[in-house]
Image 1 (cartoon, one colour):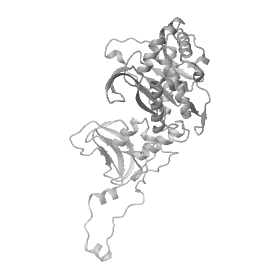
Image 2 (cartoon, helix red, strand yellow; image 1 turned 45 degrees about the vertical axis):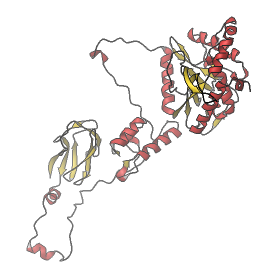
Image 3 (tube, one colour; image 1 turned 90 degrees about the vertical axis):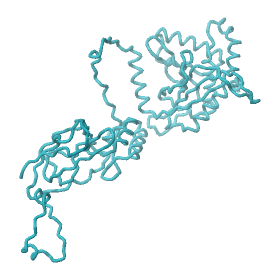
Image 4 (cartoon, one colour; image 1 turned 180 degrees about the vertical axis):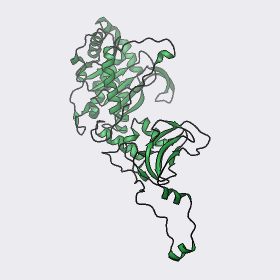
Length: 431
């Protein structure tokens, strides 16, 4: 018996190649050409085989290490008999020729103590991730979806992970609400602990209480809800003309009449027509709770962060009543006087950035709601009228994010098109 060091072979004119998989452990018995590590460069994945059979006595690298040609990988206790048979086939003597069967090809014997490692056992319950195989493209695909490649079971050749395996893993995680016990789940990596002061002057400012609280919920909602965002524009030229004609009446009553009051009312009308948007998944994730009330949350920007108070029973209120209540609740929000009940019970949320600007964005759903509407700044655009003539129209950009577990793309498109039509034709708000 002798100990040998297995090194990185000739891998071309590259250096600093990362080790992404270590496929052996101390105590493993391997054969010649069994894979021991997987390397990943910017362009390709390279699997390094052992050039000697024997028992692994030391593993000299770990996942994440960078290596080059000649870098030491493992130490192996080589079997002298096997090593000799691998390096050169012994010459056959006349005596040997006589003993051998005349027309039979005899394979080289494999000693009993040298066993070829079996393919990885793909078991979703016990997969450690250490022996997971995947190409750089599949690894990138998994990273982009937020999935831990190391706990996905592979169905490809020798347990290799395919894109289909990643998709199946994501689907399973979403169906279970992203919570896993003995089944795989998403792995959320810790934030990098970077010392920014080494790059220049810094100042540390504590997050507000609202930011600390809302940040956890936003992260949960974004990670556990499969978001899709549908975009559209609504012609609000007539709505704006009407608003301008009556906003003095609202001012006389002590509140402003913004386009948001009309939007909130239009949303309630659309929810009545498309009740699935006015629902929530129950705790099991297998049933929809259909709501018969219409409470709309509105995002309010305060000095301490974003809050979402709720306007209740919107469908039964006039636009003026909605505007007045919005004015009152926004003042409470900015003064920090909202109670917990003021922010509970919402069916659907509206986040309007129209007063600031922008053309579109992807709002995060406010669970347990299943959809949220983002509103950007309206803009005059040339549009064709019914006569085929171009005329200036005031167009309002809308961004509808929805939970794809509950709502499919076709329903989302129908919802936002109908909502746009309600905003374009005020009469529909009265029907």
